[in-house]
Length: 253
Ligand code: SAH
Image 1 (tube, rainbow, N blue to C red):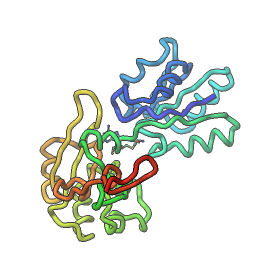
Image 2 (image 1 turned 90 degrees about the horizontal axis):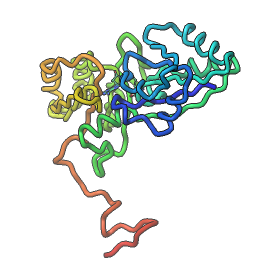
Image 3 (image 1 turned 60 degrees about the horizontal axis):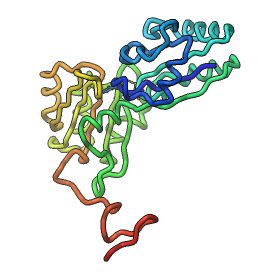
């Protein structure tokens, strides 16, 4: 049996209870070493076989999994954050299905959520935006034309941009040409939740490139853009308003 597990964004305590249990029982662990905090491997059995997938090719990963299956062992495939977001996990699941290998998936806390926690920020602020777009900017790996940042930006939602902090100048250009004001708030969170390593940078479209350069941030960072970050926009949520009834409470006025 193979368990695909989301390791969470970095803080080893942000793995789920279920994920930790599966990790502590696994005979074989294959972790995405480029991003998973190795501290999390302390939950593994001392005799567990541990592989870093950053140094492996796809077929090698599948070989380790198939070999463990034949020996009747349990494997955990540990992905950073949540496996469903830029996890390169679909091809592995498809290959396991094709080879008749049984697997399940345990979700994890994605880094865009850890970034919100670091920023102490709600992404869906009432009266401002009720939508979050998770995306990346096309670089070495292309993004479909219909999903270019320029097009997505038209909606003025909260944007959480993965894998792109090295393309911040291009992102600024895209957003400016989509009509964003230079004063649009932007935040960059480096290594959200990693104990002792997290950095939070808050700025505007016209200041953020310099701020991020000065902080020496080149990778493992979340870019958040949108008016949700603008504290002048606040409106009270209807959820706790005395004028608003819902299933659990009657209006008082
Ligand atoms: N599956 C992961 C994302 C993997 S793609 C998840 O759900 O979070 C790798 C990208 O995720 C990085 O380039 C960066 O944009 C983001 N990322 C991963 N961990 C991060 C962290 N702790 N803080 C900020 N961004 C992070």
